[in-house]
Length: 265
Image 1 (spheres, rainbow, N blue to C red):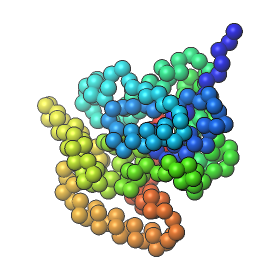
Image 2: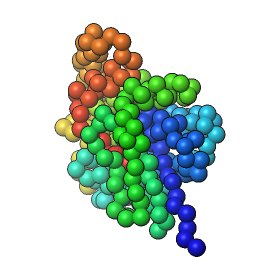
Image 3: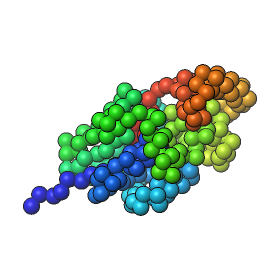
Image 4: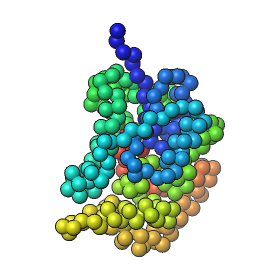
């Protein structure tokens, strides 16, 4: 007898995948929810996942690579992951997911919206079929915010200063987000700095392209001033939008590079 097709939905700790869980959990009762845990996440991410579990009454399977970030950092010769070398996504996100599914046939539900021009992570395994409920049903960003508000789950708390989920040292963070990390989580910022500096052979790697975190935070007043000016302009341009949406718009203007789609939804 053939095995039943599995239905899986990956949570990133961000708004879109959370809204998709709300949207699908009654439509697909046998859904398997998972979170690829790098062990380098913000505390707010875990708190949001717990809130999601409690509100929906679901179980979330936490997937972790057999060997963590520090092991793979050694394997890659101390080279920090970057937009050009995204080894963290491969080793800490994609491999644990594909091991979790194995050779089973599975439908993977992905929270890409109808107003986005991207496809999400497409597995190389032919047994995993991606589907996009938001795209199929024409749901856009405003719908995602409405779904989360009506469910009582709301937006992740870190959206007050950060517009994407992911590791605390994610190289896709914008300058302002690095500054705010130094204020919200000085201990984690210090660890990110240590990853830049701890190279006994004298090599230099930085998370933020073009400057070290120490150099970046030394000009934090200018970064914050530029950000606040841009926020005022954005709010004046669209006064009725939620502040989290205004923050996302301003940060996208600073750097609209698409992040790793297995991490940020």
